[in-house]
Image (cartoon, rainbow, N blue to C red; front, side):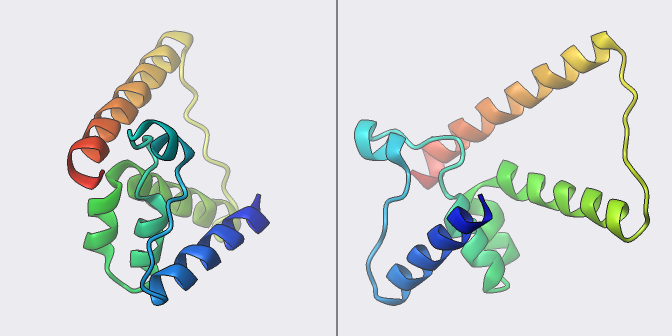
Length: 115
């Protein structure tokens, strides 16, 4: 998985420096509709350039998820703490529903503004 991520990042960076756009999203390539994670590679490239606002504009949910994941990993490895929410079954269903709604809203944003 890490190897794939590095390969995609390298291809996108190389193509960008060469002045060519590379379409990595298979859903967009075959249907013309971007997937919920479209803009993710461009967002990571923007983070690498230090443009955090530009990254956020490409895919807000992905950027937010990366911030949360980074914080959780920092707590785990630096603080030595395992994060557990301890949700009831009803709270878990509500959390999954909220996540599904966030993905759908993010997808609508990507379709309308990122393309």
